[in-house]
Image (cartoon, rainbow over all chains, first blue to last red; front, side, top):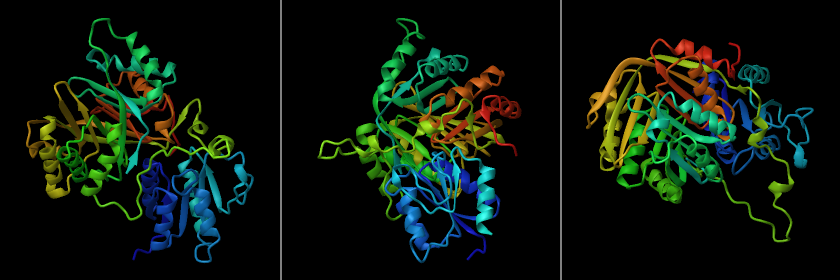
Length: 128
Length: 327
């Protein structure tokens, strides 16, 4: 088993997942990939990640749902979750109410189009 | 595996496919705000250019192209019910590409065109055939447990006469990404690539796929792959890779030019959902006098192949139209 920190990237933009994985691997992280919320939860259950980067809009199970499931479970509530979202003007904190009355307990968020360097800083901060 | 919505596929006639003509075509489509969800151009030999767009944009696209082709001359070839099947991740493995081609050949599925992105292999086929293509692919590949092909699902209207939730609840959409200057995650450049091209017929698709799977004992790699339909039910596969290894083992006459080109790749948010991306990339190189040998825009990737020694100039030209993060 590798002693690298494991980061799970969940996004239905397959090229973004690949680009993020390449960037994270270049910074010596191990990366797992999933392409929707259902597959993401499967990956989490099969191997607990140290951090999850999670897109909001995804098929089958969106990022809010997956984030809430994680944060409300005793087993995974401590895993940091960073949301990737296109709607940041509705966000005032990382424990916010989103349009449509949805709430999420994500640890941080990054607006799309993402700034890769900013995202990497946030990843590092949340792994400390 | 991922499916597109129903689209139209246009293959440009020879006079609009020329490397000097493509920028004007893209400019005209940009003025009409027509999004190209798939764009593929090959100028390594006789030029071939094809692209996909939403079916509702087809009349406006036809109108644009009619003004650009001489009356009585060759017209654009239009397939008006096309679906894109994307399999991922390909990891740059010729074995994955070969197996996909083998599946299409063995099952006699029409292959209209193909282009690789960073993660995916996007194949255009008949829209009504997407389900059977997916079933065939699932016999050729091991998919993860609990995998479901992504596709747009029609939303049912509530029985009480109210509007569907998507019309009453604001959601994140591709429109949120619009910005006057397109932001990308960075530009990467690979020099010293070889280009291999091979023409084949529909019946040769399966043996070609098998040969690709066997390259370097199954370890062969590619950086970019394009397939486009030629006349007379023939096709051209163009592969860009490090060593041109595939050229010598294919069962068909192939042409390989070693170390002749450079590849630039760009990625940005939801490029497939916004118009003007292919235009920005191609026209910036054209305006700076950089020759383009091949273009592939699919998924959220842009792949540009330019002659050796021009990659650096091309990268500089791209920074005029894309916001590139400082390294």
